[in-house]
Image (cartoon, rainbow, N blue to C red; front, side):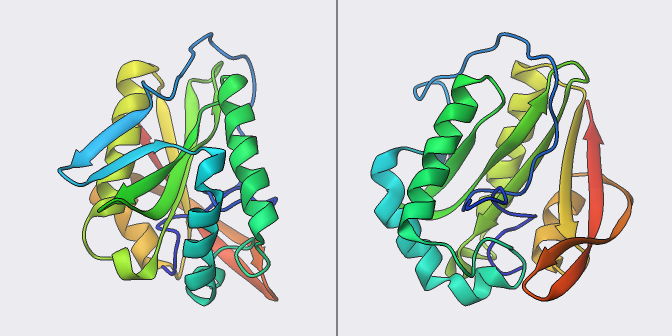
Length: 208
């Protein structure tokens, strides 16, 4: 799975996760930078994005552009300005109590990104998206990050359903929900366009 270990960033100039469609009544649960930090190992953590991350995050995208663009519709044309706007959107998302997206840091460097695309508080459901730099693959980093997000969704927010979508051919992305016990629900045929290709998308879910 070049880049995103699931469907990645939002779809309008986002280097974060995947497109989110959950909406609805929100439960008044606030998040802060201090609270939203998940320690994954001695040298790895997931935290909220800040505008100061724009240059480094864009640098990771630029170095991995061809790798990410195989599966992520935003990757081929992503700019530094688009990266900064994505970060600002994640801050607005947080203010609206619609979940959050963060950056995965390993060894003091940004390795990828991921988080909640949105939260449907009425249905108690959310969807996750994420991506990881090519050189960081195969170390369990994103699996640990996604596991922490799942625990937060179920234990802190008391949600009932977490969903992950991934292209059928994106084996690295699909391996994460399969490894974490998600159930495959079905395939959305030609659901996402990446470049000139229409990709079939597998839907996975995990219930509380």
